[in-house]
Image 1 (tube, rainbow, N blue to C red):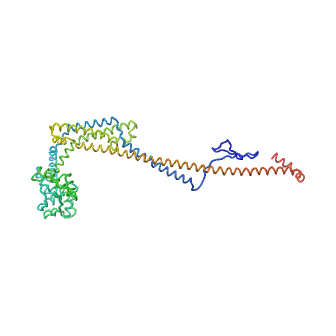
Image 2 (image 1 turned 90 degrees about the horizontal axis):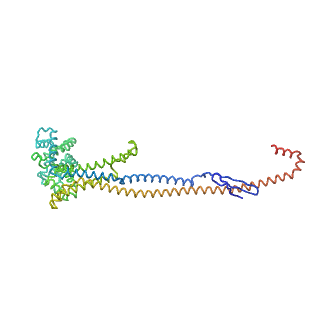
Image 3 (image 1 turned 180 degrees about the vertical axis):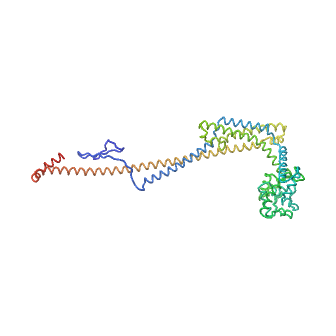
Length: 500
């Protein structure tokens, strides 16, 4: 019979075999089953794959955690109050220093700046005089363009006041430079009149003298002559120096170049640009005048920006130093005042405060000056509004809202990745369970085989015992014959058994 003993060894039960007066105890030692490419190998391969996938998803979760933290607003009440204070200070600077937009003030500055630039350029090229008209005439003669007068007598609907706009080679832009060089190689000028008609005009006999004879001279004429000729035209002609029509500025030039695109050339844009350039006299000097006033408006906006970013950097640096106790261990990324939601929110508050102060001041002053006239009120309001500040506020709001949307998408992705991580965790548990059952199956099989072997061993042992007892009994019955045939043998055996 097979009985389980109460004694446990190596975590496995011991078994006792009992047959009449014989007891045999079997102990077991657990060993890993060995096999070739089997289910165990497949389970191990599956576990390795699951582990790699879990590590990959965990890496992505860590990245998303950092991204979500960067896109989360961590500004406290001190940050918000500093942003408000910065906006108020910048608003007061705008109110008392910038004032209203003055095109006349800007135009006076731009006229002086352009005239001074023309004089310096002429003197750098050898001009010895002190008069602006002389400097213009000097540069015109030294650096002529082959397209300067070829539009005359062409019935092209191009006038002396508009030809700087209509001639693409008179534009102070990369496109203007391109057409200037192209003229050197094609001996053709390229124009567009106010009706949108694109007009290639062949260079006349006088203009051909200004075409280079080889590639280096063509490049020289198309670039150097082009640049200094435009300088000579900035302040008008030598007959109307400082007051005549100059060259178009970069903005008007770019719009004119865009108007040459098919479909845009029939929209009325070319005609409108001619009205702006000729009738409104919006040339390079006018653009510079606007730029000058915009620069004045940009000063308080820039001060607001610098104050907020500087406070953010210093406050985060102090926090890092206190936490790390050393400059060497500082995480500089946490101190940089850009590309995070906190600084975006602080700038939104600061620029919003600045814009509110600016608009309030503009509305009050416009109301006082208009005397109840709504048309006058609107005009005065536009003159007082800081458009640079409004633009910066718009950018700040967009940046803040955009980061909020990015944060929402990152959180959604994180939920999806966590779901994948849960899937792989469940798969790992399933593989581990399969491995456990695989081991249990091997153990059960081994135990059953051991039980069968023990039963067989017990049968063999019992038979051998019976055979031994039978042999001993037969020896007893043969004692007399042994003594008769082998005198003294029994005593000798007795002595051997006794003394060894």
